[in-house]
Image (cartoon, rainbow, N blue to C red):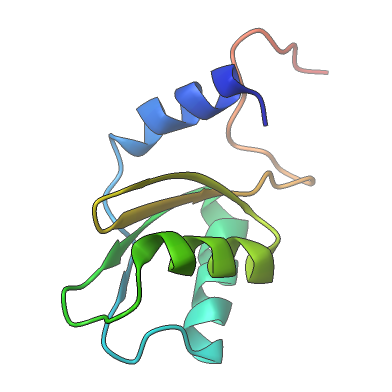
Length: 100
């Protein structure tokens, strides 16, 4: 992902609300599956890490990205933004790329 693409996604992420919250149980297989389903449907998701979660948001973001084959767009405070392009029906078009 280029820096321009990342900047564009950060701008889009500012306008969306978190779709999932990560609590004291931390990263379970069920939560990872929920993230995978959400990212397949939306491409760009925001996850809120609650205060009762003892793990660091940066470490959680890296683990989630690895397990869901997505990319970490950013981690700000206790918010994680992940992106994975849907190869079949992409909803997000980057500026400067032409649609075929």
